Length: 294
Image 1 (spheres, rainbow, N blue to C red):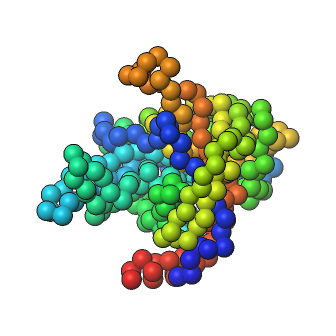
Image 2 (cartoon, rainbow, N blue to C red):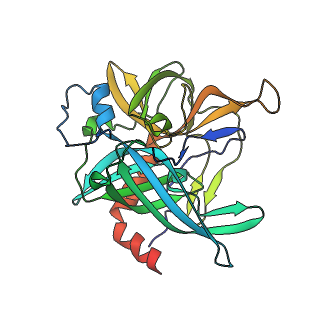
């Protein structure tokens, strides 16, 4: 596969952030159910909810001695596009699960991962779960692309107009599954559209992507574990447009070194960057799988 050398992406890793992935705890809400058509004239918050899905990731890790342990968690995802009979979803890579874990100084590599759409963490009916295929994941970008051959709910194309030109104080909405419990919207405003003073960049060497940090947006909006991978929408001229996905929230210890709280500031990855990467991966999907098998 040709590397993604021509893509200029943007991401950042902030010290003192909390990822919004919920540790797994199986405790039925059938929220995704049947698909429906969404009007191109007026997209509502209900429509945004219908294109957002709860994910359950279950993975296995193994060290060099053959010892294994299992881990898992919940997160959110956004139905992006339907291409050649496949529904593609976008989420954070940390929702899928890290490639390795360090436990008491021992390195464990991820040897297996099963990820699927479920109703919520209260889902006890596995018959309607939708297994997903991982087609791309990058820890450096904290981005993963998944797909299924089942039809999902998609927003009209005019609502995916790369509304990454956020401005201070604009009204935004986060759509996801907080705590993995239920679909929900959270409102807020743009606190900083990406001009904050961090001067480093990421380089995803595996996929050949250079990653400056300017596309991370700071929002005055409360995100919770489980919201990771949930879509961010901005309101412009009374219409809602996709602006990115939530990846983390800032935490603080103003109450002391052992007192950590959600600051109410969330971090989103820019929709324009996500779109460039995702569309490239979809267009080169056969090459991508060929390289993965090598």
